Every structure is written in structure tokens, then in C-alpha cells.
Image 1: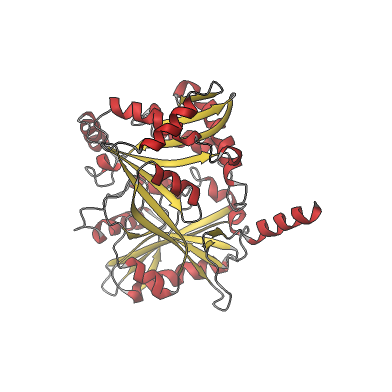
Image 2: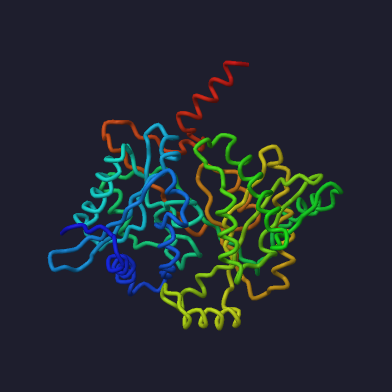
Length: 406
């Protein structure tokens, strides 16, 4: 067996075809768009290349058949926020062979180590964690758009190599045909009746304003203790919304304001995978016409919530329930939608998990994000332990210095 670097049109085609071969008989798998994956590895589209690099390989057996693939990447600004300077691996696909998997993992490790990286997380994305993040270990059902689906044996391949669970990611499903818990609506009604509270949904005419509001909430929410988080880049959100404009429902993205200040948001898209299952990952004139045809038939019955944020000082006050109250009115009108996938929430975020449960959502899928330390003598720490967030080293030091200075 040997690895071949993906470097031209031919090897890129093999890279994409291999996934189709792995999942040929699995009806749950939805082929992602090849063009979208290629953008991840194109410096013209992916800003992560400004501080890092990425490379891909395919694995060939002795008869010349492709049997595996992997990508390795690092963003220096992100990598150095951890006690062990960490890169990532992703887009892993492989036959059920530990030897083949080990060759792929070793190739990624050697390349990352040559770039002064000390650990690798996987399977993750070279970019935002809303997409292509985590290994599916529970809930082998059709995945929502951007969520990863894997054969059950991948978990064995990762763990036998030495990867350990860094954190778990939980997805919840909300059946829109079932009534919300009454106590949830009591909280929502109390919030929306306050004169200083206003709820607004996104619209493209005010696109830039809403994006800036989202960035303000996100940054204040996630930088409180998670210093390893990265600020959202305005252009990335613009590209995401503009790329999805044809299928996006403006009333699926909501904001809550208190005296004009943005305090809470939720971003949700129709689950495009329910359309993409018809085109096998390729976009051309014919497949675009197919997408338009099926979208006209109201094939999409599920929405996926990509992100939610609440400024820390407004948490536990019920503002997020006002978003669900407004969404309820939307879904009563768009009654071909039956379900919301709330994904994903890390095991380090009990507040959002409690919110999902309070809304009546049911745990449906679990993904693991793994970490592998190159120095096998170093102690491994999970991102979460005993329901308490393990803050990265530099964040702990900063917090300790702030306490000592008071």
C-alpha cells in the first residue's frame, strides 16, 4: 500500500469517488457537493490558508485500487492556543482495515509534525466547526446538511490507533408535530411581552446589519472562557448566506434585541441534504434543474439549526425561548416542515443542552472529536471532565493573572 498526494484533476476525482465507493450500499449517506469540498482546499475561498496549510492523500493498494483517503491541515493562529500545538485531520474515508487506516494516520502525523505541530484533532474541518466536524458514533441515520456520517467501524480505527475522545457532540431532534412543553411557552410569553424586547428575523435587504449583530453576539458569547475560539470573519458569513440564498428561508434566522442591543440569535437552514440525495454530489445544469424540481415539490421537511448564541449576561433569562415562539408561527404556516435538527452541542455546554431538552427535543446523534498527542508520554486531558470546562492553558493563565491583579 502507498499514499499518493492529491495534486491534480485526476487525483481529486479519485478523492471524491472513493467516498462514493465506501458508502455505495448505505442509504443513510448523502454525498456532499464535490465543489463545496474543493473550496475548503482552495486558498482563494478558505481564509484558513492565510495562517496555515492543508494537504490531501489517497491510499492505493498493491493492485492500484484506491482504498482510503485523508486530509491534514493546520491554522497556526488556532494551533498555538492549545497546550499542545494542535492541527487537524479530516475527510477520512477508509475500508475496514486497521493497517490501511494506520498508514493514513501516520502520513498525516508525519506531515503535521514536520510543520511543528504536536497533536492532531479529528475528524474535523479546515474552517468553521458548523460543517464536517466529529465522528459519528451513535445515531446512524440520514445526516443533516453539513453533518458527518460514518460507518460504525471508523470508531474502532480511530481508537485502536490511539485517538482519545477530546469532547462529545450531541444533536437533538425536535418533532414539530408535537406540542412544546407548556412551561416553555410560559417563559416565552413573558419575554415577548416585555416592552424593551424585540424579535426580528433576518432579511437580505439588511444583510450586513444582521451579520454584524450576529458577530457581536457570537464573539461575546464564546470568548468569555473559551479563548481558543476564533472570531467569525464577516466575509465568511456573507459567502455562507449568499451561497445558500436560493434555498434559504429568511424567517429561519432570528435575533432578539433588548433596548436595541442584540442579545441572542439562532441560525437555521432548510436541510438541503433532502435535495442533494438526488444528485450524487455533482453540480451541473442537469442536476441544478433536478434540485429546482424537487424543491418545488416541497421535498424538504427538516431544518437544521447551525448556531445559537446568547450573551453571557442575558443567559438564563429565557430570551432564547422567544426565538422558538416566533419559529412556531413560521412552521405553522410552512407546514411541510416536520422536524428541526438542533446540532451540535458539545458536552462542555450544559446550558444549551438544557435549553434543547426544555423545548422537548430528543437526543438523536452523538459525534466524537478525537485528539492524538504525538508525544505519547504527555498526559491527555479531555476538553470536558466532570461536567466542568477544561480551559486551554493560555486562557487559564490569563484568568489566573486577572484574579491575582484584583
